[in-house]
Image (cartoon, rainbow, N blue to C red; front, side, top):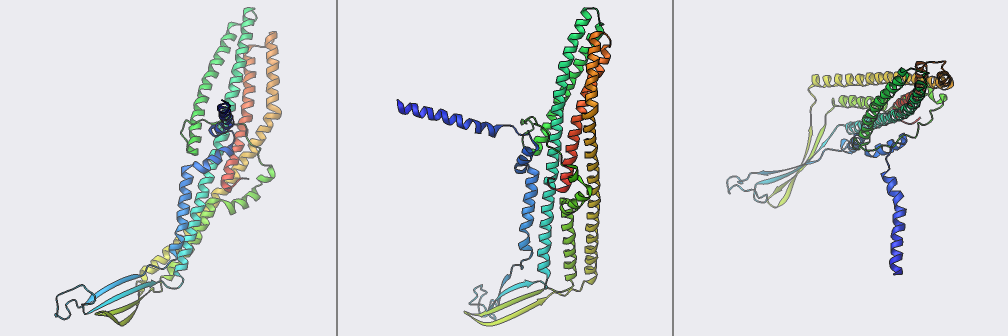
Length: 423
C-alpha cells in the first residue's frame, strides 16, 4: 500500500510539473512581433525554399571549377586478322587493341573564372534569400502592428458601446421626467446598433488578418493568435537620420547585395567570353595491345581551332551588354530603395508628430468637451446631439493616436526591410 501511494503521488506531481510546459508549448503566439519572427524563421515555406536554393547554388561552386571527366575508349582493330579467322571481340585474338584515355584541359584561367562565377551566383542566391526573409519579416511586423490596431479599435468600440448604453439610460431617465425628448433615447439606440455593426466588421477584418499572418507563419488559416501586448518603442530620432541610413542601405540592402554580385558575375562572364578566343586542349594516351601484351604506346594532343570569329565577337558584345544591364539594374534598385527610405522616414516623422499632437492636445480637449457636454445635458443646458458629438470626438482622438503608433511601426518595418536587419 505505501508503494502504491508513493507511485500515485509521483504521477500526480509529474502531471502538475509537466502541465505548464505543455501549456507553454500550445500557447498561441502573437503577443509580440518577435514571437512571430522566431516562428516564421523556422516554418515559413517561402523562406525555406530560398534557403535551399542558396544552398544548392553554393554546391555548384566545386563542380564549376573542376576538370571535365576523362574519357576511356577501346578500339578493336582487324577483327578477322586479315581473313585468317572469323570475326571475334576477344582483345587477345584480334590484330590489335587500342585503349585510349583522354582528358580535356581548358585554356589557362577558364576554370578559375567559372568557379568565381559560380561563387558570385551563390552570393546572389544568398542575397535573394536574405531579401526574401526581409520581405517576410516586414510583412509580419506590419501585420502585427495592424493586428494591434484592430484589437485596440475593437476594445475602444466596446468601451464606447458601454458608454452609449449608460447614456441611453440617462436619456430614458430624463425622458421619463419630461426633461428630454424620446428622440434622444432612439438616437442612443441607433448609435449602439451602428457600433455593433462596426464590431462585426472589425471581427471580419481580424479574421482576414489572422489568416494572412498564419499564412506567413506556415500555419492553418484559423490557428489562434494571442492578443498583442503592445508595440515596442520606436528608435530614437538620431537612429533615423537619413544620411546614416543611406550608407547602411547601400552596404547592407539584400537587393543591392544581389545586384552587386550580379555585376561582378557579369564581369567574370565577360572575361570568360574573351578567353574563348583561345583554344582548349585534349590530351590522350593510348597503349596498343598485340595478342596478350602491350607493345606500343601512342600520345595524342587535340586542339580546337577558334575560327568562328563572327560568332565570338557577337558573344563578346552580348557579355558587354549584359554587364551594362547589370550595372543599370543596380542603379535603378538603389534609386528605388533610397526613395522608399526617404518616404518611410517622412512617414515615421509625421506619425510621431500626429501622436504627440493627439496626446498633448486633441485627446485632453475631447475629454473636457465630453465632460462639459455630459454635465450640460444632465442640467438641461446642452442637447443630446452635442453629447454624441463629444463622445465621437473622444473616440476619434483615441483611434488617431493608435493609428499613428501603428503607422509608425509599419514604416519602421519597411525601413528595416530596406536595411535587411533590425535597427
